[in-house]
Length: 422
Ligand code: RBV
Image (tube, rainbow, N blue to C red):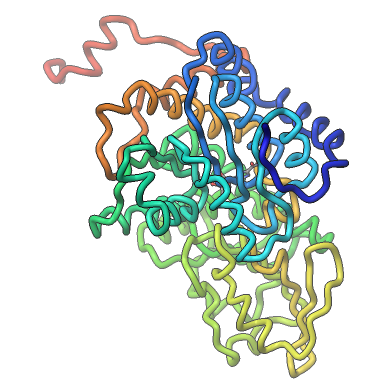
């Protein structure tokens, strides 16, 4: 029996089309690995719970895990990112889904609990909310060893687990899949990078000639700065890390404190993983340029001080889908994308299938790895094994029909030796 609560089952046919379109652009996850899983059933008897954005790409991860023999439970990792058509379609394929677009905080955690109630053996999180809930409310799943290990999809979640681990509070083996090269150099840089188009979808705005401020210069935000420049914008980067600030300068961006950018920025986009990137002070809100577009592409809705901006506004008008016009006491207008939540998932459909193919290939192979190695895993953070990362890179290239050189024995010995020099 399939357990589920979704918005509208009648959207299933539309969702199936979306899953099909993504499948064709995800050859590693949805073809190579899925076909092998189908034959070998490495996840037989295993229950996997995913707290992920419910998208056509995540749907294909779920189908691959199911093909491998797993019982799969899904809940959304953000109240506004669930694609209701995909959620409906997945329930018809035997995937247990608890997710709908626009759920409240209370409903969000209810959905997480439905997944944890299924006593999962592997948790795949995006932002850490499910695994933290397991630590707080489902200790027995951890103590009994029911949970074999966990995987984290995003930078913000990894940051939370590093803090838990350093305080001795992380009680499960945790693989930060986000930190694998096949994840952060593609999904983060290219997916989030291209996510700046959510500002274009939101307001139908021209980037050329605009003053665009990108907060942060990590994997996600550096991709955004590059894409904004490619569209002809004058890009300013803000940073708190001196090395990243230097990288931005030497890539040709101007770097400034955020407060110095407020008077001239036409568009401010954040992806820092931090809070209050624009400090929540009304005197700073008053500095913002009339008509500025504010958008966040980081995991949580506190990078832009959404709550404080709402409180300061004398009027909040929804003007386009997922865009609000905030009118300040002075009459100044500010345009807020996606209520400060991940604009790249709310205004557009999330990161494109081609890069999610690599992230979700990692998640699939790591699920298999956990089952094979469950008896040797210890609580705490454990890096994704490099050979799994390399394997995904190899399979992706192969699926693209691209061949590369291999080291000769002589070259291998040279690279790994010290003897040969001047
Ligand atoms: N992300 N998933 C999608 N299309 O399913 N798009 C983005 C999708 C993930 C991405 O891996 C990132 O690390 C995370 O969402 C941020 O919450």
